[in-house]
Image (cartoon, rainbow, N blue to C red; front, top):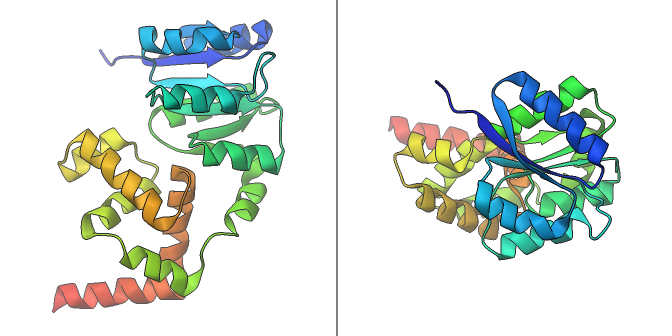
Length: 232
């Protein structure tokens, strides 16, 4: 029997938490192991329940979600996080992506869309509300272009480029470790080095960077040269 995905909910609106919990449990492949609106309870609940994914509201009565996220990250918690919020602000999404969230969803999405996106995030994919995709593109347009991308990619080791390709497919560290036959900790180290070398702030940015690089003239040329060398 396949183990259910363990989800934790953090939202100070009880009705929202209860409704989302009911919808997630109804799927049959997910179970809500923690639910709270009190920021003080989040870290202890994470340590006790060790969920596979946390769904976090951006606006909490006693603090904001990203401040809370930075706090638990500083304490060593690496539970993947999906933001579920009413805010369609480009600045809010940019700040969330920089904090390393796995997804940014809006509460006015259709319930089925929200649940399916959470399930995809639990499988290691990166998810963004369709209404926010244009703003995501605008956020990422300020990133390095063309030959600059090529120079940055050239700074990566061969193994780091392999890891980056897997990150671009939305795969989790666990999946990448299995695919490359290396340890989970080694993958984490490679991802950290990739982020540092490419001056990126989240896996979403890394995925878009890789896609744009391989789609750009410089990226296509580099891929072609690598292919010719391999044949030689």
